[in-house]
Length: 438
Image (cartoon, rainbow, N blue to C red; front, side, top):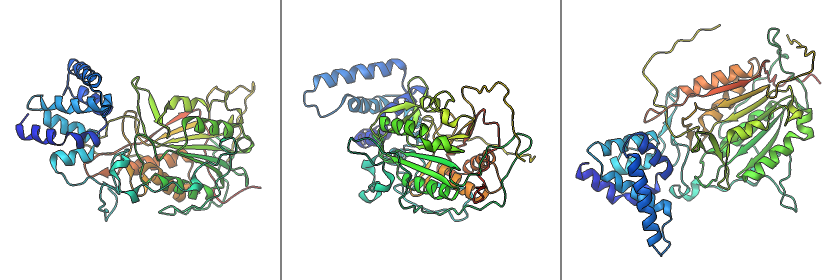
């Protein structure tokens, strides 16, 4: 490594530690072969010796490991610095890149915008994590009480419909339909009730131990604003613990609300990544994590009889790994191409059915969030529902969302491509906004 590069790393180790995450960084260093497995093992051993020898308790073991990691990097060969830059770019560690290369701030812009906004890093970013310590005080507002779950005298969360204010940055007005839409080929899910059209459960984890998700409050407001127009009953929990989330979810799934409803949607917004077993996990505000599969299993027909043979949609806009999608060069081409009843003679249904899981990004990759307006995926979802739900079924809506979000780029040319997983979601789901039968 050049002496000038070694010097800038050593002089800024404390800042680099502050603006990177040790576990993500060391895993990337192994993958890029910046450090060998033996070097990593030696790093852990050396750090443990230093930790046990210290008696002041100033640094945690991970903090010592984090410092040692950057020291090890300065001892590597001539390509080490450039590999580090590549890794920090993949991890979207914007501030660390600025420290090392004095680059201009990275911003997230929509490729389709004719007049891209130029915001500072505290307002927009292409990353899913912004440590609270990096943000000015006015960038970390308190969560409004209306978005928090109320508790009773026994500190148990109260299950109640959202009735607070709704003030998204952009108000997406839903077009109304003039009829109940059906499909003779596949059949349609019944979506025509006036009072029980659907239930939306918003679980938004804005303050976590990983960091503050700036802009995430607006995601809740945008969803509430749109789904109220669709006639959904809405339940919201913000910054709850893992136990509180699952308790509230179970209460809702076994309540009269879901017994009567025609449709159920869960929008779960938080930090996501992979654990050591390459399982997708999501973080709660108490610092705990759960496997995404554990959440999905709650919606089996056995565990959730209230929603049997009803459309269930899980919206997961969080990251599914550590890597950013850099895309590839190439051109894309696309080809364009009344209610029916289905009989079930033996009354059997699959263990898992009528479930559609909507992801903001592909497995192993990151999703992106605008620090002012919120998640690319959630904001585009709300806009497309408002524009097309009057005559378009939900799976087509999701495909439009994926195409629109796929056209976004960060300034350092990162992107994301959403996808969905259909598990027996065999009928068309039309929201039929503004046209109740009863």
